[in-house]
Amino acid sequence: MLVQKYRDMLSQKSVIRQLSEFAAARGREIGYENVFDYSLGNPSVPVPREFTEAMIHMLTTRESNELHGYSPNPGITSVREAVAASLERRFGLPYRKEHIFMASGAAGALAHAFRLVTEPGDEVLTFAPFFPEYHPYVDLTGAVLRVVPPDTESFQINFEKLEEMLTEKVTAVLVNTPNNPSGVVYSAETLNRLADTLRRKSGEYGHDIYLISDEPYREIVFDGAETPCVSCFYDNTIMCYSFSKSLSLPGERIGYVAVNPRCRYAEEMVSMCVQISRGIGHNCPPSIIQLAVARVLDSTADLSVYETNMKLLYEELVGLGFTCVRPGGTFYIFPRALEEDAKLFCEKALKYDLILVPGDSFGAPGFFRMAYCIDTEKVKRSLGALERFVRETYGR
Image 1: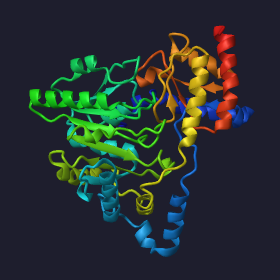
Image 2: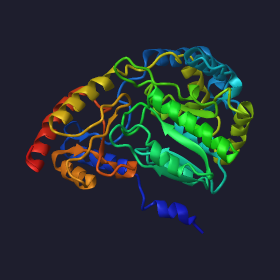
Image 3: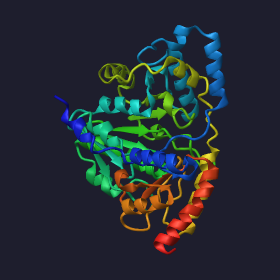
Image 4: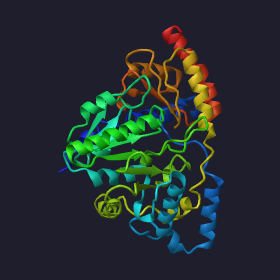
């Protein structure tokens, strides 16, 4: 007999993926260059030259089994040492290899993190707007994801609602900064207040509340800023990182879990990740990719194009009368729609070959997301279509 919960999910397909498929089909009709596809967050810039050179060098100088054989379950020792040294150098926390577990992207890292600190029936809190896949990530562990409503003025944390929802059932709080879909970077003030709240509630309830930090966009920040390191604010933090965005490697599925060295049971938690892998199959990321990223930990792809695209879109949207929080990072922008029903708004935009994602599945009805990880030339051409859409549909 088939498992019903997965059959039920067939009618709950990702809106983002459905719109991406629509854009591809429309592209076959009129040429994809004429479809302004802002649906999918797929990095658009080339991998850094250093990564390609590292791959070529290893493929021509190292033994096949070293590159293509199974790695140890926690990851290759030298890679974990390199990741730990990089984190210590950047953030000043005493990471060692014993705090690092190599994973298949941030999704694989999160799969381990949730299973480390939740039992069936426990609650995990996250903050709207949020990545919709958090629901299956959490719910399929047996834990329950609860979503704190957004502060739509700033998209920082809504602390009033957090206080209401942070009950004794909560064992973990999940943050994503820089944030998908808003592009907002949580401020040091926000993270300090969050850490204070979690310490107070942990003491009140008599059990640890863990902070799981999903950080695939950590390197994509604007205006010369840096993303505040979540782990520096709260000891019981589990960092989940991906190289997909920073190195433009989404297809290679490589990332890591980094347990804060000050976290109670930190080294034991990494050992537990090995056991978790036995049950979920997220084990032994490709050896050659582990070795390659270890050689370019201080490099990124040319991420400047995302800031260029953000500025073009933000100025255009504000000029057309949209209400929009200016992104501090990522490659997303999250304006308020020009009518209450964002789904209807995005449906009307399709007539102009603008593929926009309604904010309902992100926990923020009335807003829409644009993923501007596309060529700048295409962004510029899309502005005319956006202007026509707004003028002809809304009289602006």
